[in-house]
Length: 128
Image (cartoon, rainbow, N blue to C red; front, top):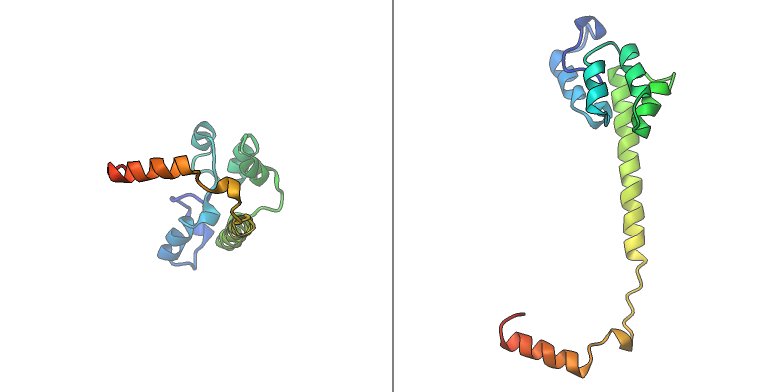
């Protein structure tokens, strides 16, 4: 979103190294179709928003149609936090789903005598 080549008047009091670091944060990244990205280039945010709005990717389209979206280092930090929170929520959901898997073993889940004989033979042959 915020380009690697920016105009110095955006952040006159900010060290260049700080700006370069923020540009690489996840809050400054957006999935974007290659063709639209080329058209948007390193243009002003207003121009880029028009291209974002034309995207078929929901999160990118939202960035283009959201009137309250800013393009500055504080907004990158805010998006970092929102994205991190979303990822944590997904991971917590996966963890909860994993922890709720029943672990009881029924007789149906036990190997039959025939299965045990095959396992023994496979071990004897070095296959397992």
